[in-house]
Length: 116
Image (cartoon, rainbow, N blue to C red):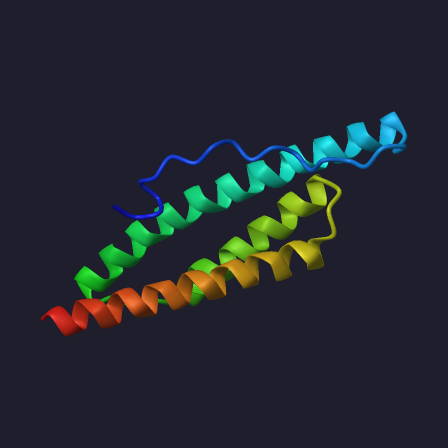
């Protein structure tokens, strides 16, 4: 049984100390909810990219696809602009995620090569 197979109790929002203004507590609670959603969305993204990595390894494709990555950067920068988010920040965030995905894909390729 892996850690992913074990059900985990819900993680409560951060507990605020006494004396915090209600508006600040409400905003922080909202941030906690958004952070939780981000974690779950990232987990879903990595599940999908793992499947991509397995397919790439099975077909002998390279772990990295610079053309796809560049299209994603362009797309994400446009989305960031529409969302009133700093496109430079959005690009750095995507680069961080893509670097981790490539690292996973390289490991999958190595595992697949080792099985052959």
